[in-house]
Image (cartoon, rainbow, N blue to C red):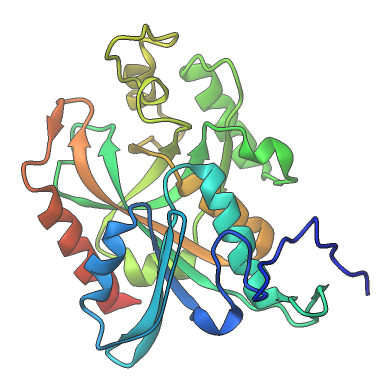
Length: 285
């Protein structure tokens, strides 16, 4: 079996994975991810016990127990570039023998739940609600570097988004875990999430810099393909879903809706919206 070279999979002197600083014993099979490092403590304060605490760069990890369930909470920072690092290194921790640098014979599947914030693209998805992402559409370039295979139906879906949004590029699409959606997102609004490569112009926000696509939000909010519509903007979900499909992990994204881009509202109590989502997810993982 071919060994993975040190330049392909970089490890730290203690044999932990390079960016996350973690070793296999420091993570559970169920991982809750958040963008903001400060949000890790907001989740683990509900835990009964903390076993491991690792802090490296923007990647803060705590593993412990919530009602006898062993869980890991990990912060990722923002953007699909960070998500690629997180997904590859989590996969390496469970599916690569880090000492021999070889792929293990038996594949292990992780359950990964992104708990994040998002802005609604539809007038009937109110500020303060919780949304679970069914499909995620990537408006970044990450999947141009991987072999992500889409079905014929998904390709038609992408073609329709490309044409409706007048995008100068073709996005990619991936679907989240069916089993996790049924368990964790069963009573949430089900949506199709747009993952943007930025917070301002890529999501149609104009402050001082002129927009190349000034009608982006309106066009995407009116998009329909069969019975599908686009429901919300954020910055990570498509990276999670695509990497989960490629690597063979169960991945789900749940979103606290803090703004509505159509009504131009923003939540007056964002922390309460996020906290209620945290409690819901912890009770269902």
